[in-house]
Image 1 (cartoon, rainbow, N blue to C red):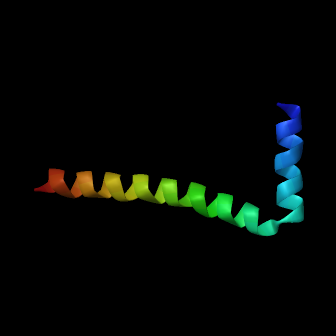
Image 2: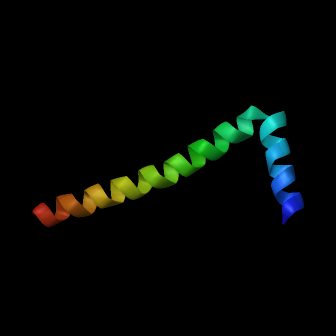
Length: 46
């Protein structure tokens, strides 16, 4: 577990693109949820 965290931090330090990719991936998941909520809201409006 600790080794995995150290490896993860090392990847971020060595390869900033990995951090950007993770941020983008998490952001896209949140963004998708927002779109889903907006679509549901629109459908409720009629």
